[in-house]
Image 1: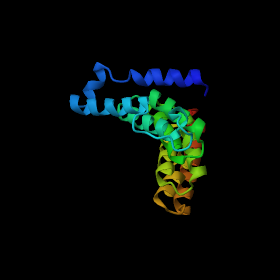
Image 2: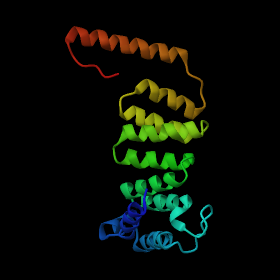
Image 3: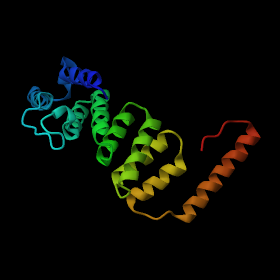
Length: 186
């Protein structure tokens, strides 16, 4: 991302609390969230860990901004922050998980699955990434892959009997579809 894109994100973030957001909780809770986000925007009390004195180049600040925006149900703005954080440090699997979560909230499941796949590539033992990847696959109709992901999230080895039953069920659906000339989703 260039400086212009970063400035656009900062401008979006600075206007995040509106009257409709107040319905998310008490005014006091909203004020606390607003104060946190304003401190991130201003860089107050945050030292850049990897980039000298420039908070714009600190992936942790952008990650934290994204988390705060996500708690306000501002999923697109949160995803923009996660994207910026990933532009600075692309090997943070937790950021990929959060990005995928925002895409899931935006009903963009195919893109979400790509984010979760990146997370599990970076951290194959991340059970939450496997679970969310399964959910994304489920939403796009990739049920076999979804169940495989659920197994990995639970730490189970694939069950050959269940896989055989799933193949049998798929075969029956295709036969019925062929007889009645209907479309089958597997």
